[in-house]
Length: 414
Image (tube, rainbow, N blue to C red; front, side):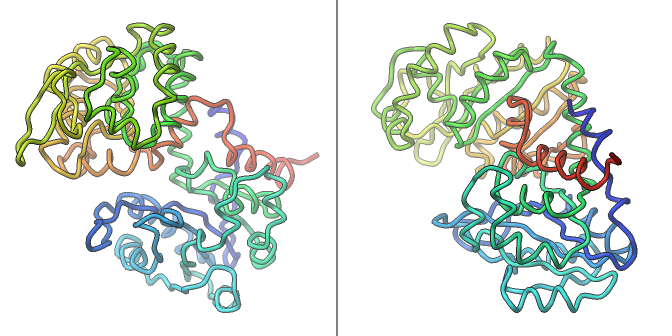
């Protein structure tokens, strides 16, 4: 399927006529320091800078559309701070407007010269962008209808958003000839490589806090034999531990209740019955006691779980030995603190040491890999955490469906 998309979709050079007006959707959504709100990992900006630079140097008029978090969250903010980092990696000036589709934004878009780039503000300031609907409906939104007439082409490079059916992702391709950017092309090639293995020897490690989506994705990739085995950690691992061992301390119950996961215990228990040893569950964890890392078994958990334990790491390591490819999608612990990044780091290190094909995805996973010098050694860094997992677990992603419609509408001769 992904190989077919690579053959079907138009590459970026076909949307690069000098002077052409190009709307470029990227995903520069980045982890922020909760206190200072400064960007603490800029990998996505660095990755997308390559596409922006390519377009600018082809003398295209580039307008960049992206988002940061979503309304109601602490890291929901303007993209002004992202602009300076983009400039550093692109090596050219990036203009910025604190507007998305209003008069100021449209005026600056019209005034843009060939070879210049303009970054619009956080597209999720527009309420329509938060609502997911059918692809055809998103092409009728104010956002798409106001901006689309100002452009000749749409370039989609925001793989990390490909699982969302939102206007800036699926609406524009229906109205504009569309191409894929350099980041998107690499993501499809990596997915194609995993697909070629047909699940044999593919191991997936999942963690993070997006538990509901991850649990269902794990069930699906095992059901479809996309992967051979799954290792779980983070809050996801908490649910599997409670379901597997049938026991929860007060600290574990608190985590389950705070994240609204009580209803998932029975569902996960059924998954464990169905998939047995294909799901590798932690048997110990690390907790924080007076600032120190202490490893304990499940019956001795007295505070928040910060990482998988050392015994679990050895168990995971044994699983890696029999694999061909390892995908790490989401951190297994609180990686902001080096003491609790051990679980995530050990999986990546062991996989590389054993010569496995390694893919990492998700902002915090990338952050720890870059911090420890492992990022340059892995085979592929996916800009999308949930998107990569969704691509593996679902037959189609909304962005890919929209691009397919666009390609057949504007590029394929009848």
